Structures are given as C-alpha cells and as structure tokens.
Image 1: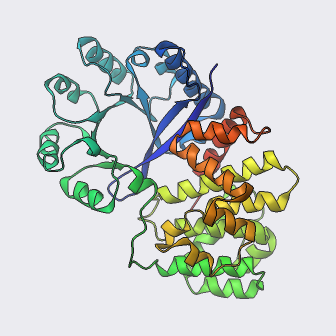
Image 2: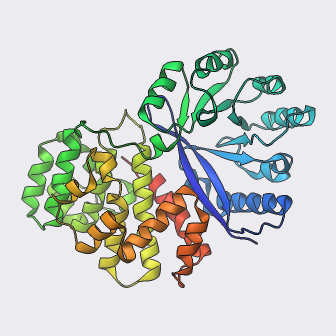
Image 3: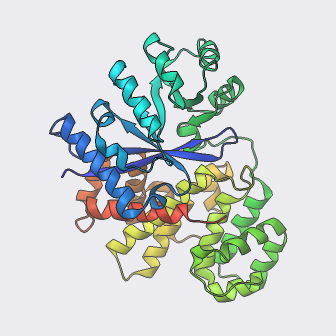
Length: 408
C-alpha cells in the first residue's frame, strides 16, 4: 500500500478554545494509481488509525472532521468510523444530486454528523442538504469580503452551524466573530500571529523566569518562591504533577515535595507545558497553541529516540526545541529577544533561531508534517535512513495521544 501521512488542523469555537480537528490524510505517492485506489488507501489508513491506535490517540475528547470524496461517500468503510466523534465533510468536488442527498440522509440516520466544505454561495442544489448537514464551511479566501455578511445572513436562516475557514489574521477573525460565525479554522488559530505592542500576561513571564532558573540549575527554594508569586500557577502545576500523565504513584502535597519526588528534568517539561496552558480562555478550555507545542515537542522526542536511542541529553534537547519553537507566538515578542534571557544549550538555540543542525532539521520535518507538505517530509526522510514513513506515522500517533491526554 502507498504511504499515507496524517496532518491536523485545529477548529476553534467562539471562545477560541479547541473544538475539533480536521484530519488531513496525505498520500506520499506522487504517481497516484487512480482515484479508487487512493480513496481505498485513505479509508484503510483512517480505519487502522482509529481501530489500532484508538480514537483517543488521534482526537482525544475532540471531534474529527474527515474529508469525503464522491467515491468514499458511498463506501461501506465509513460505517466503521466512530459516529459520535467524526464529522463527515463533503468535498466541494462532489456534484450534488438526488443520490448524494439520499446518501446523506442515510448517514445522518446512522448517527453521523455532516459538513459541507468550501461553500462559496447559497446555490439551489445545496438547499435540500441544509436540513440534514450540521456544519457549512465558508471559504474566506474565495468569497468577496463585501458579500460575506449578506451570505452569512442567508445561511443563518437554516438550522446549521457556520464555520469560517482559512482565517488568516486577527482582523478577519474579528469580523467573522461579529457576523455570527460559530466555528473558525485557519493559520491564525493554528499559529496565532505575533502582535506588536501587546505584553504577555504576568503568569507567562513568571513561568519563563522559572524555566530560566531551572535551566540555570538554581536552588529548589528559588524556584518554589517564584511559583508562590502566582498562586494560580502553583495550583495548576500541582494538578499537572498529580495527573496520570506524569506516571507518578505518589501524590504530591507541595511544590517542594514535587521538585524532590518528580525530579528537575520532568518538572521542567511540565513548566514548558504550563507556559502554553496559562491564561487560556476558560475552565476546561484547551488551547490550540498548547496542543501544537505539546505534540511537536513529544514528536521530536520520539524521533530523537529512534535516531539516538541511548543519548538522553539529545532526546531531552529535541523535546525542548519542539516545545519552545512557538515561544514567540506565545509571548508576543521576537524569539531572539526571548532566548537572550534564557540559558539554553547552543544546539537548542541554533535549532530554534536558524533551523540549523540535526535538531533544526528535525524541527523543520515536524513543521512540514503539520502543514501536510509531504514532498518536503519525504525529502527529509531520505536524509535519515533509520527513519521511515512507517516509523514516523507510528510516533506521530503516539505524540498525538500523549498531547491529547495532558491534564491542565
């Protein structure tokens, strides 16, 4: 079977909290054997991913939007997918006719949720589907901004949720929020832009200082005192240390106890996670940025284990590069300015600032995989003989599962 790679794009709600992922299955076979074979291959990978790894590994508690072409729409393979957690997204290439409408009603009766992808206008042929689909995705890149408010108003007459896709910047996000969109997707939410003139909140500044203290091998007492400046951070850290994700069997009763029992290096990782978790929208909200950073860090760690299984320092640096690679977005200032205040290993700093060295190349590999740039992924895999597409797929699913199970 041809190689298939998985990419995810976050979908957020009106609070900018993570609601779902669009799962993008990319083929590594540039000389495709035909639509039917490609469809079958994608379907099998989806079923294998959900069946062998478990839905929690791929999506956690979130829903997953999965693209359907005309062939896949009629495939029995769909019925093997978890109906309560997937949203079947009809691609714009599907010609709407009576058979498609009947099939959508059939899938809806089975318990599936449905979405229409890349909608540009309220055409007559899609009106019969608006009583059965749950979500309509409007493609902002292809719709005249002046016509968008009227189009939104028309769709609001139907019992559907509106999703703005390809939201690229803050102004677009603000306008879509005002127009009444229910969900949002695009690079702005997956990788929020760096806003000039906006200060990071005090909790993030404190956590960055704590991380710097840890990297500088400061005394435990200094680290505990820094946490005590922000009681909410201390509480969040205690929750994370006591969560099942740490693998500890002893419940931690204080920050000092946590530093001793857990050890500096594992605790340092949780501080990095807290950087992305602090200041989030509301109770139980999940930050898309935290999901991205956590997955990237874990994926780099797992790839490093494949490359140098006995080099613990290298493995630890790989995790750190992945986690810290989004600090500029998080802190709203240039990365060189942030790193200048930290005591990072030169290999880590070079990877973050220049994408140089082995860790820099590994970070680029992860970024290309996230973006679904399969040609670039394959090029980098060829330069790493011990790292195959099969291994990369396996460790990516493991990283997704780890990030999904983090308690914050």
